[in-house]
Image (cartoon, rainbow, N blue to C red):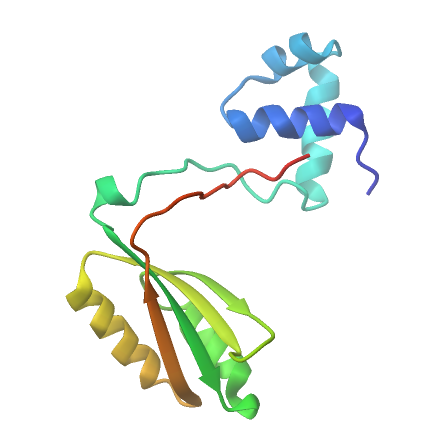
Length: 148
């Protein structure tokens, strides 16, 4: 799919405020509201826009601890491990990576006790051979927007 300057401007505005009206976008860009409707529909259909969502504060919802867990697996069990991790509560991101580890996961949870429980569950997944955990002390940058 070819993304032109109008699509890019629509995407920028939606990343800033997903609740902005098509009318307001159209006024700012200088095209019709119908054009915005058609463009957004096309962007969604082609997977450029995955979904519209609210970004909430984990800390204000009791998820005060963030950690990254690096995981080694037996290569033959990698898909099973990825599936198991993807279905776990408090595991918010799962990455199949290159390097010394096969998988990196991002966990958001209440405290060290619940983190320990999650790490224990990860260790019990068939095929997991080793984990290493890094607890986040301070988030310096966390960006959900893609630079367009």
